[in-house]
View 1 (tube, rainbow, N blue to C red):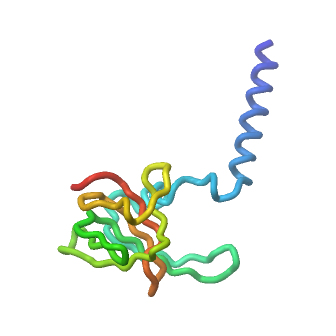
View 2 (view 1 turned 45 degrees about the vertical axis):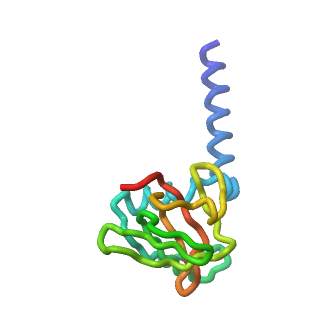
Length: 133
């Protein structure tokens, strides 16, 4: 009986592993998890050059800081190494609050965020990490 349970458990785990391995990127971890894993919690600013699935080269800039001002077209961040940085924001930017998706209008002063923007374009993704600090 124990061998049978073990075999069933092994099959379930292999199937689950195969599902997540082959699943679309929608099942992936949120962007902040990737930033946290690859660049660490002490990242202030980064520029990442990567190749997308269609073969084009993408240049993405990442900024981490505390929001000091918000408007419909930009946010101002206080970063660790300089007083402030104004970042243009797309009106259709995606705001991720934990596992929910929101809009730029939900951002408030004092929120700690990671902003991702294509080079020479307004930010298209903002990940809320928490409050202040």
